[in-house]
Image 1 (cartoon, helix red, strand yellow):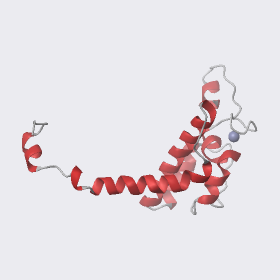
Image 2 (tube, rainbow, N blue to C red):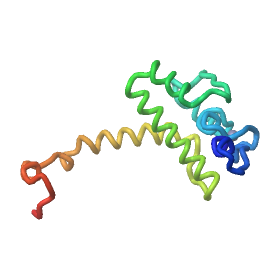
Image 3 (cartoon, protein in one colour):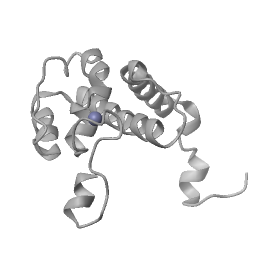
Amino acid sequence: MVNLAVRGIQVCTQCPVCSMRPETTIHALWGCNGVTQVRSDCYFLKGSGWRENTHFQDFFLFFVQILNSEELVLLCVILWRVWFWRNQKIHSPSTVRTEDVVSWATGFIDDYRSANKSELLKVSPHVAMCGKWCPP
Ligand SMILES: [Zn+2]
């Protein structure tokens, strides 16, 4: 909401989850009390401290430098799930729990990788020759 206010849009900038701080991107995804559990559930997020005035780009670039590619994928899915959790909490009755964010993200990545290894996704020679969908 802070980004909208900076652009002149009249909105409440207070975080709707904790009502304690302005809702910046870094607050929503990292600093909010609502995501404390997520930070403690992920080994590479534990102990990392970020000020509320840090730009999200700086936060993300830091992790790009220190994480391997699999950890970076996990971070992206965790942040995506935190964003989903926030939207659910704010806009609808939520069944998503922050306690489940890291395990959900890990499971999602595993499912995605398994699905991409599936025999069903391999392109048949017939499809490859057509270049477009053909009736069987
Ligand atoms: Zn908050």
